[in-house]
Image 1 (tube, rainbow, N blue to C red):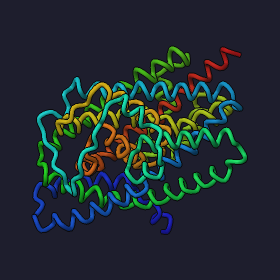
Image 2 (image 1 turned 120 degrees about the horizontal axis):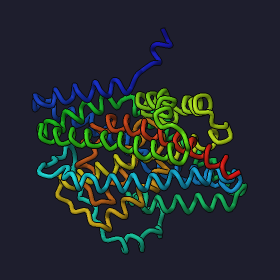
Image 3 (image 1 turned 90 degrees about the vertical axis):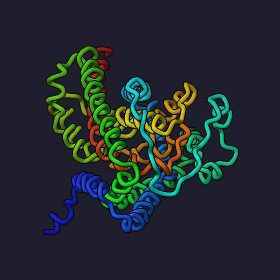
Image 4 (image 1 turned 180 degrees about the vertical axis):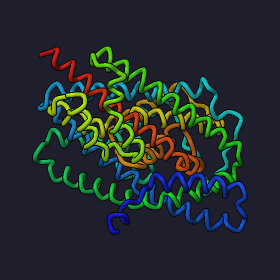
Length: 403
């Protein structure tokens, strides 16, 4: 009985809340708007409360972990190059395709809560000049995520250099990260209610036209997910890993399906390791490094989601996305992928960090994004896990050939 109580399928309830909210939003009475706004605002505030400590500490901890590359040799180095390279490619793909498909054009998005002034993008050179925060604490309070990211990199690299002397800082960051994950996990238990109220308000305020456009974005996104997995991962497994791609996808299906259902790369790690070692025959010394590292920094599909949604919202709001803005978003997207936790809802923190970099008013679009986040996150996590296993398969062949 207690075992059944613990099995709370958040993903299932989020999907139920999503469709129930859509249905109610079409006929939402005016007297429900205020209480729904209060609930939605409390939920989003609780979620946003942990964005900066979560992103900062996860990036510092990840950099310190990656710093063992020098000691673990070729395996970690090859994996790091693979993950960052494919993430950059995926991010660029996500920025270009929505523009070619004209997603978001011809619709308007109405805010469902308090509106804030959109962040102003001052150009790539000005952004580069302001990368180093003169006052890191001010960067946190003002919400300058790019400076927070750079500060995290500086702290992470400094900890690597100081080694044992920086152990207290590493432990502190790890503790704050664990606390942040714990809080986010508790908040995620209320995500079905948050999604229910948020999507109802979005539908009520924007009408069905916006949601039809969002559905088109989701369909286009999933088509890209499938093509990316088959062409990029399948192609690399075949030509670089010398492994039958059809057999590969069959061998890793249990991990992929588990990732799709749980929206968590971390929770899928044991199954991924089992598929890699038992089904594909990848040595444990490779698996033990590439899969945990991949769960931390391999966010190819999340990068596609971020780029897709940012381009969509920019088009819908009539905010021009220049080449300089795209370059900044792409670079920040790759950097943020290192700090995006492999847990359900981790992409929300990444989106909240990236959107202001593109000059988007977060208060106006966050509710819409949260409403579709789970549907996007399910496919994205599945593709990310496939990428982790594809990397391990390729490295099995590459490292054995180089011996």
